[in-house]
Amino acid sequence: MLPRSNSSGKLFPFIFNKLKVTPNEPFAPSFQALFSTRIVGEKPILRSGAVGVLERSIKFNQLEGRKAYMKHLDKIYKQSGIAWFTPVELFKPWYAQGIAEAILRTANLSVPLKIYEIGGGSGTCAKGILDYIMLNAPPRIYNNMTYISVEISPTLAEIQKQTVGEVCSHLSKFKVEHRDAMDRSGWGDVEQQPCWVIMLEVLDNLPHDLIYSESQVSPWMEVWVEKQLDGEGLSELYKPLQDSLIKHCVEILELDKNETKRSSIVSKAWSKLFPKPRRCWLPTACMKLLEVLHAALPKMSLIASDFSFLPDVKVPGERAPLVSTKKDGQSSDYSNYLDAKGDADIFFPTDFWLLERIDHYCSGWLKLQKDKSSLQGRKRRTITLDTSSFMEEFGLPSKTRTKDGYNPLLDDFKNTKFYLSVPTHNIK
Image (cartoon, rainbow, N blue to C red; front, side, top):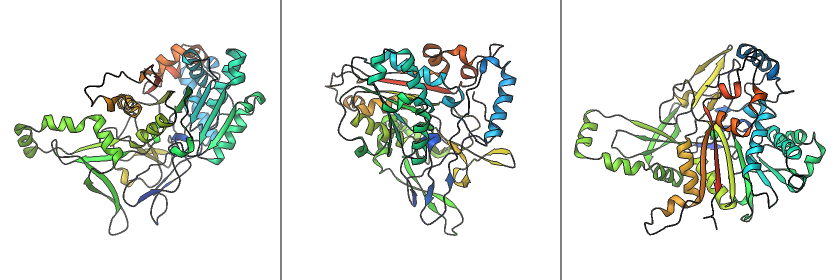
C-alpha cells in the first residue's frame, strides 16, 4: 500500500456540482488542479497545492533498502516543501518509459503516432515518453509523432514547455493546448485517425456526485449541498434523481435493477424493521470526460493510472473520498466532507470495474445491449493491471530496485492500477 508522507499528502480541490456550489474555473485534473470550489458569495472551501517536481532522479540502485528509501523520501519532501510527488515524478524516467513501451507495442505504427495527455503536470511524463521513443523507436516514428498536452493551467502549460524543451528536438513534436478537456468544442471535428490518450492520477480528483437512499429498498436521491440558515455551515438536501449523468451512472451500475430484485414483500418488511441508509459516490465527471473523448476521438486508445483503494477513509459511502488535513505537522482525517474547509487532502478511489463499464457505455456498446436484436460486438478491448504487473511487463523494474531487492514501485504501490482500453474492429 502506498505510504502517506509526513508532509500531509496531496492538496486536492473538492468539487460539488449541485445547489449553491459552482467551480470558479473549469475542469483541471489531478495534481495539476489550480482552482478552488466556491459556494456563491463565499471564500473557497478547498484549494489545491503546487505540483511537485524533483530536481533530479532518485538513484534507487544506490539505496540500501526500504529504510534508506523512506529516509531519502522524507528528506526530499522536507526540502521541497511539496506535499505530494506523483509516481511519474518519483520514478522518472522509468515510469514514463514503461508507458511509452506499452504504446509502442500496441500502437498502429503505420500511421503517425499521436498522443494526448490530459493534465500533464510539470511535463515529466511527456518528456520521458518523447525521450524513450527518440532513443528506442525507428526514426520515422519519432520524427512524425505529435504529443499534445491538454492543460487548464497557464502556469503549468509553461512549465511543461520548459521541461520538454530540455531536449530541443522534442519541441517540434510537442504542444500544449490550454483548455478544458471536458469541453467538447475544444476538441474540434471528430478525429478518425488512431491516437492515444494518457491520464495519470486524473480520475481520483474528478468531481463526483453523491446519492442517498433511506433504506435498502428506498429510491436513490440526489444529494445537494446548501448553506445552513445560520450561515456557519453546510448541510445536505435530498431530491429525486434528475441529473442525466447521475441517471446514466445508476443505469450502468444496474442499481435500479438490483432494487427491483430486492423489492420483495419480505425485503420491504425487513427494511422497515431495520432500515439501513445507503450512500454511493458516483464518478459523474469521469463519465462526462469519457463521453467527450469517445465522441471526439472514436479510435483512441486509453491508458489511465490511479488509486484503486485508499487507506483510512472515514467518510461514509461506497467509493467515498479520503478527506484529510494537516495541523502542527500531524495529519488528521475527516469523517464528514462538509467539515473540510481551507486546504485539505481530498481524492477518490477509482472503481476500475465501473470505469470499464463506463468506457463501454460511452463507446456505445453497453447501450446497444438494450436492443436484444443487436449482434454487434464490443467496441473496446480492455484490461486492468496492477502497477507491478504493468511495470514488469512494459517497464524496467531493475531501475527502481534498491541494493537489498526492495522495489518501491512494485512493493509500495499495491493500491494503484493501470487501465488500458483500445478500439476493436467493431469501430467504424
